[in-house]
Length: 347
Image (cartoon, rainbow, N blue to C red; front, side, top):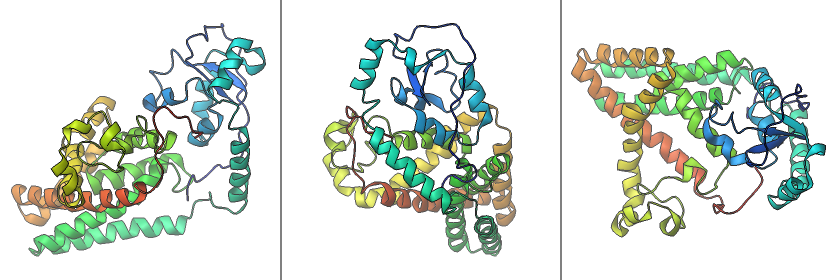
């Protein structure tokens, strides 16, 4: 299911003649053999400041994977000041070598070979039967949740609601990666539905954070999934290298196997629900996500028969959803090697 849709090898975007801007700022990147000046564009990048992680590097594979089905991205790239790599001055060419632009050629060639094999096996083709099953499961559990809550089964109902919201995390994750149905517009709406109704969050905000992880996985100072101190230390080096390490006491770190489950997971979830994601929705003028938030609140108010009862149900179900999501998250991320901030490892 990984990338869904278009998995073909992309052709280089041939730029229109543009005025030559200075490439001396090092705010450039290579994509398909062309050097692009992104000094003016980096603040406008729809994916946020993840762009800065590839400055002065060969971003061909990153660009192709993140924008595999985006014609708009190609048009934007075509509009940027650029020059063929053959016109790059010798001094800049040496700098590229210093930044290991060429050093990963063999590794990336192996990656291309592996990817081609996966394409041939159909790994990237959407599995609509499985997608339909996951959506039906998501809706069915919430239907059962409504029944339980409306009959007064508070704990069973809120636990089921949290579980369903967590299960919907898969739908929103694949929708965010545009790898659900092969239709990008539909995938985006399915993400907004599943994360909005299921988790009271915003898909756009999640994408903004999550894509930084994919651009620089397990890289200190870049991968947001490692930026967890002082709430929790996912790897032991965080206790000596994190900028916020002094904010976590030894006693708190010693308790984290327990505190992470009963406190940290829900604390992060509530922070997302109450502040981080609503702020993003307001800034981006996203009117669809609040609709699903309203539907979820109405769902609980109807089940409880009162506003206070409904909000109490919602708060407890978000507590359980946070545990489901972040517990799974920690199991998926904590066992892989960490890259120090000063190291360069190919995407």
